[in-house]
Length: 323
Ligand code: NAD
Image (cartoon, rainbow, N blue to C red; front, side, top):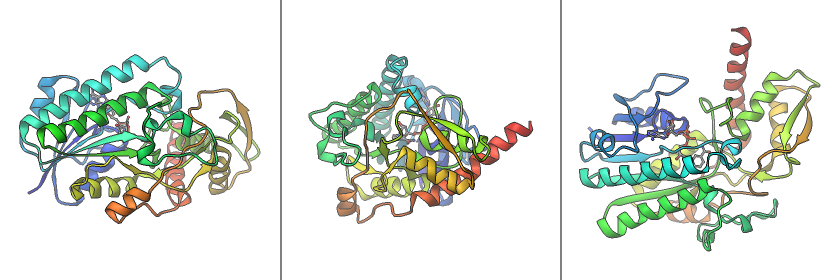
């Protein structure tokens, strides 16, 4: 039976990934500081542990797993990453996890290891025009990420690539672009734009006004979690190193995103623009390389994923109101 280790299995993407690997017939061990928040983990074995600790990494990576997915990171949306208040913690925590986990995997003779980097590594100077951001993989250097979160990701990407060069490990790196879906953080300060907007719209009555950070003309693309997992597993099993973008090319402004969610909800929503942490003006995935090398790229519409996500968040909001 094939065996997989998912680091960060208590988080949003990790919990979905465990479910997917189980459905594919893997024996799965999950590890995280915490268990998944919204549903029991599907893992055969779930270890609650701190992956900054070398002993924990060695204990969970006690065999030559067929596949290891390293998704654990200290992370959140703009309200967590861009305020500056969490920079030291983000860099220290995530770098430690990557250093310790990669070394443990090398010692255990792991067959293939995946690392989730982020679109946040792309230089801010290429993302000033909301209509024309450049996020081609080879535009990453000269480096100028807009956050310390991005700098840590860039360092760790290089670490995984160095382990491939120097130790012959089959490491693969993807740069995720704004992944969303049900069972993601939707409240509390670490939630990202799609979840935050779904929550605000779900809490509002028709005709109400909701607050949006910035002028709403900043652009992004958002990828539904199932498509992210398809790209992730395909990349790891292809033997390609990457880094490859895994994201959607359907770019939308934040105002456009609000309009789409309001339409799904069947509500008339007014928007008040307020100051807030923002990040770059424009960002979109560029899927030319992954299409060429893997003969695959995500294809489902933003609307499809948003409908599922809105339904899930609306259910949580109704539950919270009813409680
Ligand atoms: P998440 O925050 O839901 O999951 C990350 C998990 O890592 C959390 O459950 C957290 O408890 C765990 N973790 C953090 N420090 C740990 C430690 N010391 N030991 C053990 N576990 C620890 O985030 P996610 O959205 O599921 O993202 C997964 C990965 O993908 C992360 O590396 C993230 O940086 C990357 N990524 C995500 C997105 C996105 O839009 N969600 C975009 C780009 C990159």
